[in-house]
Image 1 (cartoon, rainbow, N blue to C red):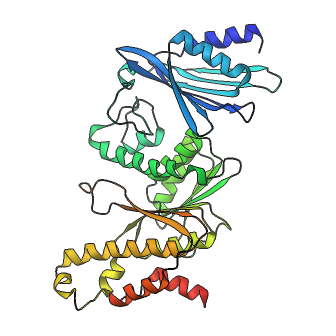
Image 2 (cartoon, rainbow, N blue to C red; image 1 turned 90 degrees about the vertical axis):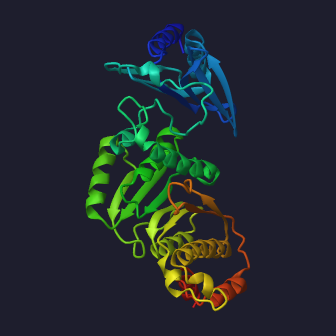
Image 3 (cartoon, helix red, strand yellow; image 1 turned 135 degrees about the horizontal axis):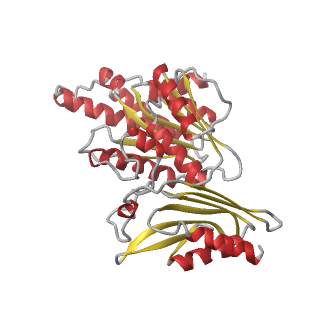
Length: 390
């Protein structure tokens, strides 16, 4: 980078280094060692606005706070010989910087009218809770969902939804090492519905983390699918597509890296899990709903006095169903956890089953058979696997 180019870059960046800044992402490393990505955001520290840089080096993250002058020089240093691409988003506009292999600098700037009162949305350094999607950074699908204002402020009455979306993204953050960083990851969301979590997943994996992904949303409601496809075009999410279809019969892909099924009703969850295992998906995230199948069949003479209370039987059936599903996934070579998705105070349907493919199958078939015999049940998921083996 020539000195004139460096000075131009510093001068241009300084125009955006204020309270209107939303984020800066510097990526595309020159070599395999050292810094792989840097994310910068504004913070209020003792009443002043500073810029916190998060450097990603290997599996570790390092943070430092910078003034305007320090931050602009820091960006120039990064693009000098460490990273080749910078994306800056602000309420004042956007800045895109590319550095060629020969060191030639390309700057594209798009100015716009600054948002009013942007300073009030700069997060405090010592805030109580740190979310993956942060308040103060406008996210289009959250605005359309009514969770966020145009300025990036969370609508108070929709804060529970904001927390739920972030909680879901935390589960995805945990499994990032299981996804490919150098080739396309195929992800399917069965029963995607209005798809606010599908959009969140795309935004997080592709826009924030830079993973090469293709996400397919599947649902039985055509009107919902049409609306979701309209929104993804508006957002420019070109690797996200929605289709009308049934979980059990979907054959649109030959391999899948991650399967997500959120509130698929009753046995639809079982068919989704069965498809995921057959595809050899590395990751399964499932939030079951309406476990009617076991509730209808469940019978045990010893437990009859307890089962006579309908609400108790219903909740026990739901817990038994999901525990059995988790054990069946263990038998298929998945390390499986049952986790709390949202607080119990918001909904009793708060369980997420997370399965990560490990390869070693748990020898638990005899135990599962005895448990199901004691409950007098014949459930869909074990039946599907049994039929496959015949």
